[in-house]
Amino acid sequence: WLNKAEGVIFTNWKVGKFPVDVDSIFGQDYGFSNDPSTLVETYIDKSKKEIYLKLHLYRVGLTTSDLALINTQHAQKRLIVADNAEPRLISELKSKGLNIVPTIKGADSIKYGIALLQDYDLIIDEDSTDLIKELNNYCWLEKKSETPIDKYNHALDAIRYAVSYQLSNPNKGRYAIR
Image 1: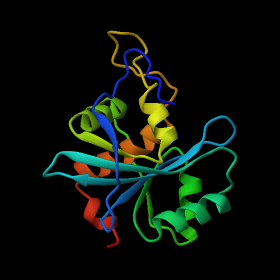
Image 2 (image 1 turned 180 degrees about the horizontal axis):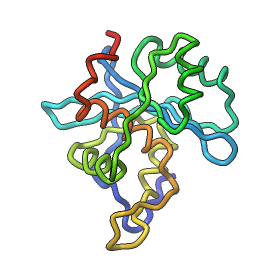
Image 3 (image 1 turned 60 degrees about the vertical axis):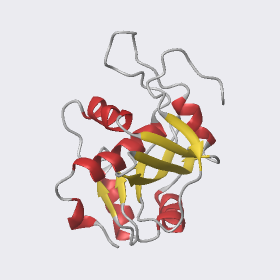
Image 4 (image 1 turned 90 degrees about the vertical axis):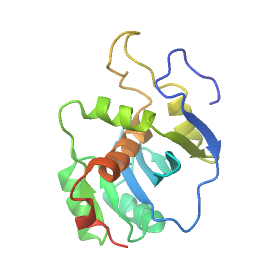
């Protein structure tokens, strides 16, 4: 998982410790058969321009009940910003007591999210090996294109949802439970 592909999108990262007792927000992407569902904890230190990341989930074949249990164990009452392509699933997870909202995807949201992440140093928790594998393999479709490949992006999509919410969402205070 340490091998790095040529032309990776993110080079602004290193392995480090996720801080304890911080006000973190989670991002979640959904898969089932081929793609994994993911849950990534994020903490942004704006003064140092650092984003700390810790992968808690990277698995296929999970039911709504499985996701609810895992999310409750890791996120507890903290906010989860989830893939808006699954409104039924988000509604079911919310009905199970989770503090979860859909991400807002606009035009060029992938490119915008990548640019946000490239503007910070990323500190990856050492146990987040699947996230490190994605960072080492997430490349542009073609050298001069601004379209990334649609692989190695499940944890990274979850991160984009959480980070975009925190850095650019004018309604963020409305949903957060502290």
